[in-house]
Amino acid sequence: MTVRRGTVSQSFDLSEECARRLDRDDPLRSMGERFYRPTDTVYLAGNSLGLACQDAEAALQHRLEEWKQLGVRGWLDGEGPWFHYAETMGALAAPLVGAHPAEVVFTGTTTVNIHSLVATFFRPAGSRRKILAGALSFPTDLYALRDQLRLRGCDPQADLVLVPSRDGRTIAEDDVIAQLTDQIALVLLPSVLYRSGQLLDLERLTRAARDRDIPIGFDCCHSVGALPHRLHDWGVDFAVWCSYKYLNGGPGCSAFLFLHERHYERRPGLSGWFGTHKATQFDLNLDFDHARSAGGWQISSPGILGSATISGALQVIHEAGIERIRDKSLRLTAYLMHLIDGRLTQSPYDFEVGTPREAERRGGHVALERATDAAQICLAMRARGFTPDYRAPNVIRIAPVALYNSFHEVWRTVDELVNIMKVEDYQRFDATSVEVT
Ligand SMILES: Cc1ncc(COP(=O)(O)O)c(C=O)c1O
Image (tube, rainbow, N blue to C red):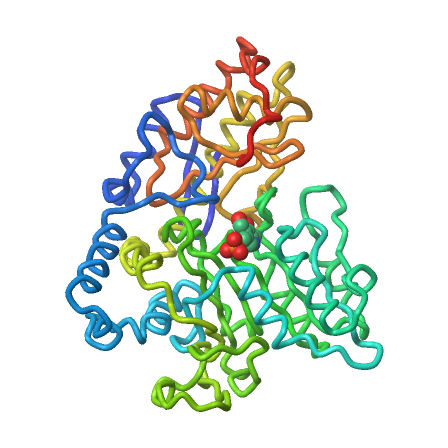
């Protein structure tokens, strides 16, 4: 099989030697040395929690030292002062999403940022009082949207319109666009669907929403760090994403938000003192006047220690280059699907790939589906030293991450799955007692 994308052409076969050859030809192969590997496992869950790297660790130690040595003076005297940390990290992340430096800020969490931006953009009026989202969106997005509807006196059930999926895996852009009626006051969609890994056409959806004067935002948790974006040029109104998946910021690390510069004059929907102008923040005025940048959408003091890792983690991504990351990621997932097709889809194994095959329609992970026993198979993989994750009812998500996974690891994963299926030892696992899957 040959995969073509731009100038890259890559041929695959089922042999282990092919994996070794792909690794030899990988321009990013040395990046993996910067990452810590959980012991005794092939890590395939970077779309859930990215791995720690030495650069992130050094950044964290550096901030800890500053706190020890500077105390409160760290806010202004730290190297890259804490006071400006959220804006500085926003500017550092901005090229990854095709934004101007001031359009991105590092703040809050994904869900809180959704609340804040929906509170900013959702202005129900007359018969235009519904929000459009997707039936396959991550649940937290829908929880937040229903609350925002409720807070505005709308009906959280009837006024949340969910674009249905035709196949249970994907959302068709045509179906979204068909629902952009004059009753819709806001759209919030994922960039990449968390279960199937489908990548939506953000440019097309944004154009369609803007043609109808409907603000549109995206939850980009599953795409930032895995592929390039052009949020500014596409004209996206707002976006949110976490830092703990493909950005490798670590568990609990702060999130990012993007606000297109044409919206700087809008009043933030949830205000807090860190959103005021930096120059006058410590005048402690009783009237809120927000900074005219994404920074105006901060609420509270940045978590310097808990989020110190991000500067190191982003540095690694910049060094690798987001285009090269995307390129390798596409080859890894194409290779994985090729191996699945060749070794796991036949009876009696009966696996299916739930991720779109086209490069421009998939994110960084592959959804390996099986009608029965997927949760137990995932546990069997973990017991044998492989860490994918499971999403009910039938998906094993496998994320070969360009920065630290190799083609050989992908080959070993499929080989081990074949072994598990041959001896059927997954039957002995009880998937009902697992809390985090
Ligand atoms: C698409 C998506 N959005 C939001 C979240 C949750 O984000 P947070 O816990 O930062 O609010 C997740 C978590 O995995 C996610 O996958």
